[in-house]
Image (cartoon, rainbow, N blue to C red; front, side, top):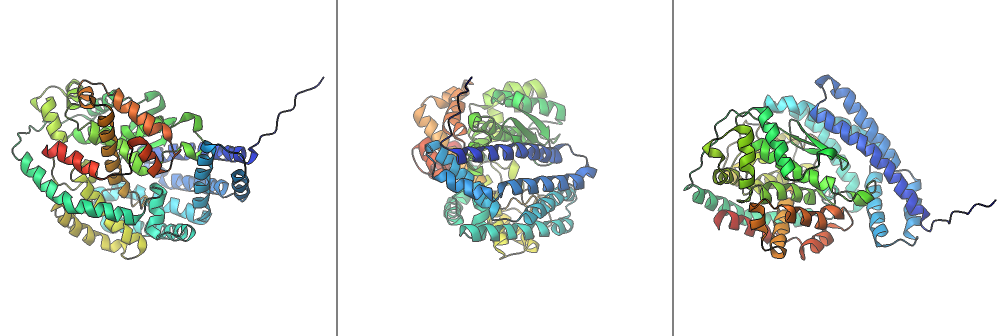
Length: 503
């Protein structure tokens, strides 16, 4: 009796790399769910144990990602007869390997511990306006982020800030961010003034609360259903700062509630639903490989802002929200479709970034970028942040934040969690989102009428085909060109704002 021999693979090194990354993907699954629980449900006394467990998991994953055998496998795979997709996959594997190898395990674990400690303390310190206490925890976070930036920069030949920016927006450099944000600074203040002057003539009815949290939660869940979220592959919970976490197979979203205002939780939930749908529609056949990951956080934010700003703030979408709002919050004149749209497009400078309208929002991002970049480069220190914040808030939005740390430099979780280099992605995402919808309108001339009728499939189908299903198959400039026919063009964002608010 004879048995047929299995033919030898022509790509053994590549296949071995795939198995290694599949293992990392599964460990990342556990780490992601533990991180989500840390922010959503973990009791306070579990903070230290969870921080240590996450640091341990981070160290283990770093060991696997820096196994010396990977260098040989990567080099051998380069010589194998790979197709175009496999070469793109190998490119992403090498990018992950290079970033991991630039950092020692001791730094990875120390950074995880410091970030967890600072983020957990921030939850109570922010409410108490305790800047002095926060600074004590933020200093080690910044010190470790600077060390991470130094090592990554030396390895990649970049500036320290660019090395961190590259983690979130691969290929983007601060010189390009400076150019784009510099142009924004030229026209944005004038646009804000024009829009506010125009809106002074509007009659806006403000909703009368209180709005029970249970009703707001039910409203948010209905909005998620309208937007196509798959509840068999994710859920919505509550946290101090809204976010989307988990993994593509199990997306964990959070929002936060105030009983005097329902719009903050509703728009926040819609924003996170954009993130969630991107994750849920990443290419399942590639899952476990870096090429299946979302390409960048700028593209990720383009999805959240496609949902929150381009779609939910669309005048036709308010008619879809009205029956949902009335079902859960009762009937009042403020809930008419016309008034809901006025509320969702009201432009007014405010302290809080996540509650900002889409016209003033870029000012919040520019402010943070202009502080975090010199902070990482060592040009300023943590103690300098409040004065810089106050000056830039006055310059960009005309607001006085002196002494108001909780609504100033303590309002976001990002710095305390060590996420330096992330903030530019929000406004880059707004620009990508405007470009996506400009392309959709060119390809589907009835898009605006479709949205008003509740026909949202053209939006979702386009995003799935052009962005979600592509994962990291293409580097960002190529993905943008394939989706829209041109490179990132900030003029689409300016035209969108002028058309919606001055047209």
